[in-house]
Amino acid sequence: MLTNHPEENAVRIPLELYMRGHAEDSAEHMRAAFLPTARLESVREGPLTSWDLDFYCQRFNNTPAPDESTRRRSIDWLDITGTSAMAKVTLMHGSVTFTDYFVLLKTEQGWKIANKAFHAQPQ
Image 1 (cartoon, rainbow, N blue to C red):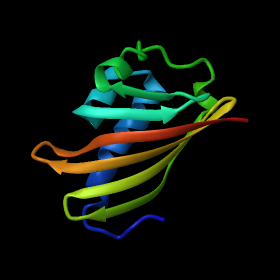
Image 2 (tube, rainbow, N blue to C red):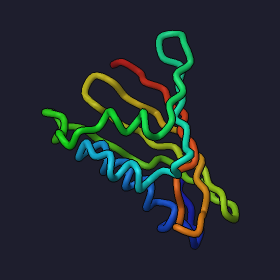
Image 3 (cartoon, rainbow, N blue to C red):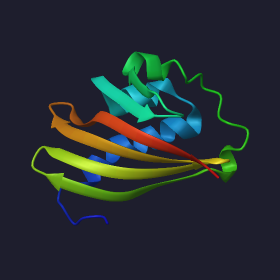
Image 4 (cartoon, helix red, strand yellow):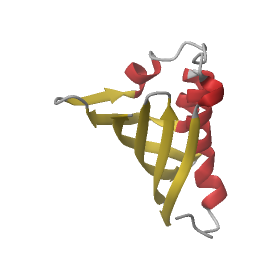
């Protein structure tokens, strides 16, 4: 579900940067999308993973995936209240579908992703 909230377009900016970061394999886009203090967390194959932004950005090296043209990403819903928001994003990356849940904050630099929790579902 998307909104008609007056901040919707602004909230979409960091989410679109995040999706572009995946498409272009770009740490620069990820750093622009997230607060520097952001945490990215999941439970994968049992243990909790909890990364800071610097660790996460090490995964990107400006080399898009060979199957990039077949990958799909969508913003599924937004919920915006004042200076905070939540979003759900789906990334269909080859044999794995990622479901990402974001908490966003409106800062002096605009909307930024404060935290991400995600689930990876093999297909």
